[in-house]
Amino acid sequence: MSKTISTTARALSAVFAASLLWALMSAAPTATWASGGCSQISPCSLVFTADGQPADTTVNATMTSVFNSQPGPIKVEIVQSGMLNATAKAAITLTITPTANPGNGTLSGTTTVTTTGGIASFSDLSIDQQGFGYTLTATARGIFSGTSNTFNIWGSFQQCSTPPCSASQSSATTTGTVTTSSAAPGQLLGTAIGGINYSCGGAYKPLSDPFAFDILSTSGQTQPGAQFSAVLRIDKPVVQSSGHPGASTWQICYASPTPFTAQPGTSGTATIGGVTFNTGLLTDCPNTNPVAPCVQARNKDNAGDVLVTFLASGDPVGRG
Image (cartoon, rainbow, N blue to C red):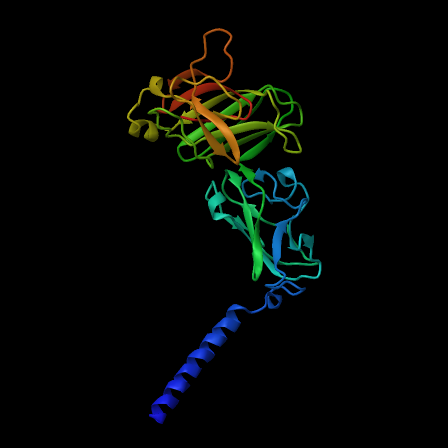
């Protein structure tokens, strides 16, 4: 009997010791991961600094905190009780937020940086896919993670001189070409294809990749009231598999932050890059004095591709 009790006691002691070891490991002070006073009692958090938020740039270009890759690193700080903890030290890692990766992009460069004075600076990051509404997430062991503001990765920026200004972008199935006379010398015509997901009401099913374009200042501000003429080319294989091979049946599923008149029964809304857009199929332009947005022409070229020309305004996106 005493032997049984002794055996049971030893077993319980072993279980207690294992449980205690597990508890100690689970509750290991965060100070061992982020020196400088961060702990479970007084936790720290990661925050993108006001001057270190990622800004818009183009595919594979260096991401900085200033528009179009102008100098200024992305920065993340360790905050404790709402203030910078300048003595805290940790290895901070940046990744694309899984739920905010519109172009299925990959983040390249030095993604893990150790803080100096409580701040980590990232100066050689890039993303390889176009998209609107990316965010980055900062993580470090034992510290609450932080998420950046949204930003966009464009296909290209074309610097405009004398009007008109034109630019194009292509994907495997779609080519978009846009022309504008609204850009002042020195302003940029931004274009992107893909990296956006939206649709229009009704039975229409968009098949081309979305084509986005806008005029931007050198600081990245969009120019209100800009007017555009765009041509969306949908490749022959997509046309053949669409069920409507004739050019006359193709429409433009349009998106704009500004309300517009759409074909009846097709109006809706979509969130693109954190902004609410109005959506709908464009009406046809009148033969005289057309006012954007509207579809101006539809035809097929010798290769069997469908070309839809439409007029646009504001901050537009179009897909066929």
